[in-house]
Figure 1 (cartoon, rainbow, N blue to C red):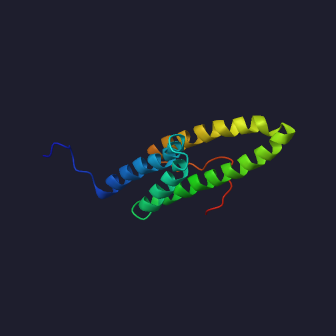
Figure 2 (figure 1 turned 180 degrees about the horizontal axis):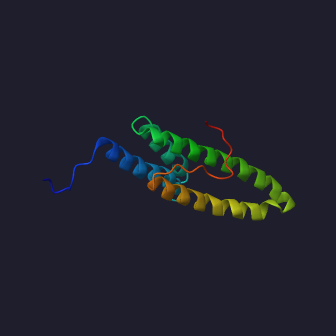
Figure 3 (figure 1 turned 135 degrees about the vertical axis):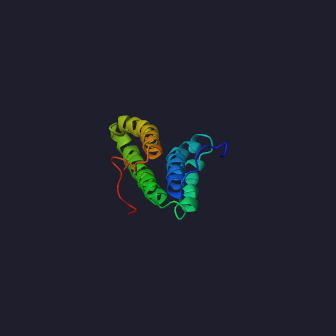
Length: 125
């Protein structure tokens, strides 16, 4: 018997990898806090590299990209609305959601669930 315990089947191994890479995909947006463009590039790179190997990653990637594009649209709208002072509190709300949503999605992905970001516009299907 090996020191790694019982052998995993291919489907168990794929499920484990999908969970791990799904979590990495969602949490990779935080790379943008260290290197500004990395928060966009890291998820795209992970998504494109792993989507053929792990089909569920494609769904995670589309959900995340829909959220990031929606966040961009909402941010532009809030900046325009900030001239009316309405957009300022909305920008703070967006900042909070841009931290909370990827964490929730990463946790759900690690649990084997695909979580559709609330408030996201479906650009990619």
